[in-house]
Length: 360
Image (tube, rainbow, N blue to C red):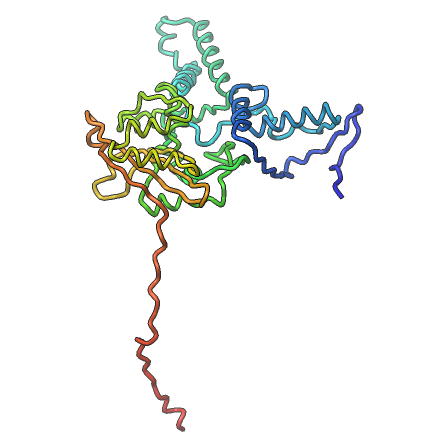
């Protein structure tokens, strides 16, 4: 028998008691169009919050209240107004630059020499400090932490390579998780635990340099990106490229960077009925005389037989980058485990020893 959780009646509404430590998971399967709409609302309408979970939770709670007079005694976690910085998202360069300048300008001590020389007044210093603090507070409200903008702060590229590259290349669920990174909480989608195809990267010597290159860089303009991505994209003459999210971006990157002799094969692989591209990364190969080069990698999942292929490709881009690009095309798949040599018992020579003590 299904019963309602603990509750009481308040102002004519049924109010349920919320235990924030008691978490549950709902698998929500839906058409891609619906998911795209929910994602759009999460990113473009702050009324709902910044995640698909927040959008769905807001709509469900509003419907429960209007249709059934059901409410909750605490704000549900997904609806908390605290902004979060999502793991795996680069900090746009223009925000980083503005924040670094504001942090520096917010310290009155930085104006001491000018103040002593009579170049600036106390009131002007106060105005500059107030303006800088307003800038800092604006970005803090968006979820950015001032400590992330320290001049000696490790780049985004270094941060993800410290241990989250497996998360970056893996398929994600629709459920979110909160983890601690660098002493602060970040929210991200959970990795699909059944997906272990990341082993193909290590087995084939494919090292991810820039994960999810479209989301983290190529969907954005040059000035919006983390400088780490622009620095790496410069090695393949793609730092000024920007692609629209229209379903044709993977075909376009192939047409631009894949050797022409291999283009048809690559296009056929990504357009196959049961194929889905689950990732696009900038990578290098752990091979002799290859580590200085950079390549694009399209991670293709075959939904029918649940297998994965990594299409790694690049064309020789010429110019100043002829030492970091070359014509290359190879399709990587699962590496068969090495078979262990079986012991042939017929070849074993047994030597017997006689214990003289037994005869006594």
